[in-house]
Structure formats: C-alpha cells, structure tokens
Amino acid sequence: MAEKIKIKLGRVQETLLLPLVSRAKETRYKHPFLNDVKSFELYQQLDIDKRRIVRNLSDIGIQGLCYRAYKMDEAIKAFLKKHPNGKIVDIGAGLDTTYYRCDNGTALWYDLDMPDSMALRKQLLPIPNQRVTYISKSMFDYSWIDDIGDISNGLFITIPGVLPYFKEAEVKEFLTNIAPKLKGAEIMFDVISHFGRFFVDIRIKAAGMKDAHLEWGILNPATITNWSEHIELVRTIQFFQGIKKSNQRVSTRIAMRINKFFNMTQLFHLKFV
Ligand SMILES: C[S@@+](CC[C@H](N)C(=O)[O-])C[C@H]1O[C@@H](n2cnc3c(N)ncnc32)[C@H](O)[C@@H]1O
Image 1 (cartoon, rainbow, N blue to C red):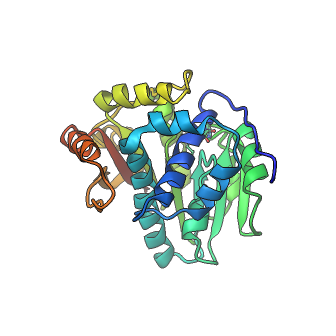
Image 2: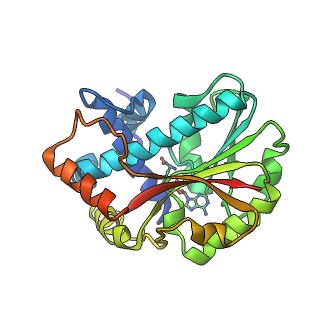
C-alpha cells in the first residue's frame, strides 16, 4: 500500500483540509448532491487526523462547504457555456478539485495559492495538462494578473473559502486593486456574516486549526460595490437555497434554517466593469 502523505502548512493554508474532507465525505453519502471522486481519492492518501476533523466539521459544516462548491460549479459551467475558450482563475485553490468537476476540454485554468499550499497541490494533484497552470504566489502579489494574460475570451475568478480569513481592509485592497485591471471578469466568493463568523470560527478551532481566524464579516454586498465604481453586483445566493433534502439529519435541517434565518453565509457573484 502506498505510504500516506503527512502535511505541514501555515495558519490559513491548513484550512484547505476542511473543504477537501467535506467533499470526500459527501461523495460517500448514499445520494450525494456533490459527487467528487477526485477529492475522495486524495482524502484517502493523506495522513491526517480524519476522525477529529470529520467529527468537528459536523454535518452542517460538510453540507455548507459542499453547497458552496456545488453553486460555484453551476456558475462556472454556465460561464463556460457562454465562453468555451475562457479562463478560470481559482484563487486560494488549495486542494480544490473544481477543474476535475467542471472542465469543458477547451478552457484555460489557473490555480493560485501560497507556495506551501501550492507545493502540496503539485504533489497530490500534478498539473493534468497544458491548459492548466499553477501559480505559486500570494493573491496580494498582483503580478498574477500578468501571468494569466489576455482575458478577451472571458475570465471567471472563483475564490472559495479564502476572503473571510482576511481583514476587511485587506479584502478591500485586493478587490479594488484587481477590478479596474480585469474589466469584464466575473468573480464569485463566499462570505459570512458577523454573527455567523462566531459559530464557524468555533468549528474551525475544534477541527484542530487553532491559529486560523475568520476575520471578515459582511452581510450586504453594497458594502463592496460602494468601494469601487468598477465593481457591480450580479447576484447573491443564500446558502442552502434549493438544496436536496434526501441526506440530511433533523439537526442539520434545523441548523440550515437558523443559517438561512440569520443569513449567515452567502455567495457573492460580482462583475468588474
Ligand atoms: C479554506 S482553504 C480553501 C481551499 C480551496 N479554495 C477549497 O475550497 O478547497 C483556504 C486557502 O487559501 C489559501 N491562501 C491563504 N492565504 C492566501 C494568499 N495570501 N493568497 C492565496 N491563497 C491564500 C490557503 O493556502 C488555502 O489553500
């Protein structure tokens, strides 16, 4: 049997395990709404404290992280129908497997992450073909915009599970810097309310990631569109809208209702103009 892979990552980087473990677990459910065989394969290779991560993620955590991936996939697939030769940039890619779920055979994919996370990605998910490029940089090193080059065939930027770990001033700096340079691009990321941040932070700590803090809480996308004339709202998606109910425990359904009632987690889909 192949030797399991031990991992050592920085404060925010180690959180990449949470979505990976969630996608792997959901895939093993009887009727998964997200079927991610690649994540399950990876999950099996890693030497991590799986029992503790799964126990502390909780069913609602798993469903939330998979719902995020599912809705991002829908948006990316819709974008690729309109722009089959477009570019997708996955910022803070970690061990994200979006490419394996959404590729159309013609698009160009760019996965960007910090050097330590990217080294792990290269080891576990080697570049699959020439249409995929790995960028080993911080998202705040804006030279990645030069790395992706021409965006006249369309650009979709996905940032799952990254921005809430930064302070609002950092998120503002990031978005207001890239928006005027990437006019026409669509961008989608998940956000958490101030209230929701409190609960999710407890879960992240309980999963063993004691140094990872959720820093940014937001409820209203107007906060962001007011930062720059180059940022427009396409839509917001409240977590768990329209989710199939077949797998859920009663406790999970109650948690979903609370989440919806307080609008704790959303996806913001924006456009740079
Ligand atoms: C919660 S994980 C999400 C991983 C992936 N997006 C997914 O959904 O599976 C957060 C990711 O953000 C990355 N990250 C942290 N700081 C970053 C930065 N300054 N620039 C780019 N990525 C960063 C981490 O390395 C990690 O892979």
